[in-house]
Image (cartoon, rainbow, N blue to C red; front, side, top):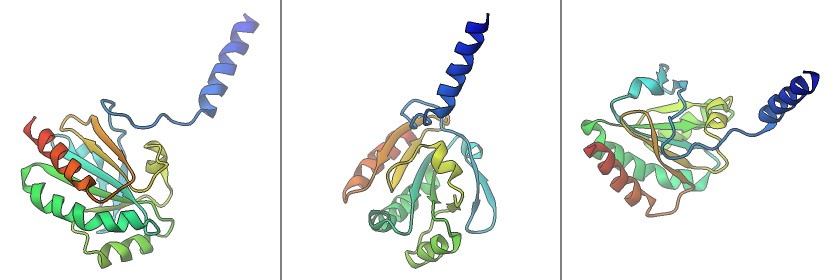
Length: 164
């Protein structure tokens, strides 16, 4: 009996020490609530029934800044069709994220993850990271990083999910 307890304790300790599994296609999107730039709280689960693109970004990330105008275009194109785009800024200083978002003319909601809880929940190692979630709250696509032209893939995937 003592050996079983020790084995269970060892398994629990091992599980606690392991990093969270990366968000993967066909898994449930981890729910979160974050404060937005406009002062309100936004909860992911409240977006059920819509196609959601969550884009994690930082002010120090050049590709993030390059991607923002493309994300604005996608937001404008699909927001009246049941599409939501959420930018999650991961800077320690929320004012930096707000300043850059304003400079870049970001039109979609920007959420502030200054304590990195949501970034850790989604196991982010790359900036930017983009997660596309279907109407049922399941992760369908995960994109790590950004290169010019990725927005064409986003566009195709958004259209596909909106048709479902």
